[in-house]
Image 1 (spheres, rainbow, N blue to C red):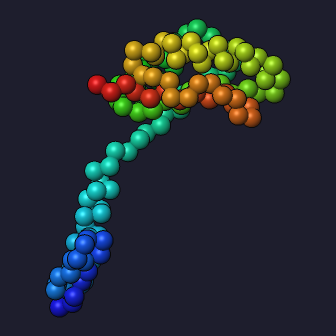
Image 2 (image 1 turned 45 degrees about the vertical axis):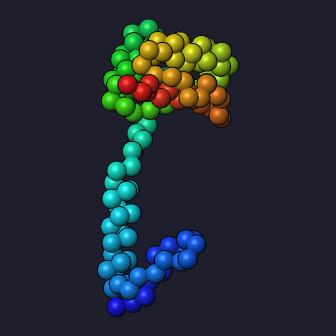
Length: 128
């Protein structure tokens, strides 16, 4: 048996006489349980090109709707290859249209932002 300090910040500090190894085991078990109950955020990515056609856009939009209904975040990005970086405005318009089409299912967490050759935007699902 050991003298274990349970809460040192209490006005008179609380101590108990218990088996220290058992106490550590129970604390570890509680931490594991808390970690298991934590919500895991899943991020699904959808890639566009600056000249994405209407059919391809609709196909990817349906996938994004499915992801948001499942509760996952959606990271939509436009990838600029080579000289296509000249069409930054097309990419931004595409992402804003994407956000507008998903307005009833999710809200925009981060507006389109250019990072290197990628313009990214995050959409989170709305709470039910």
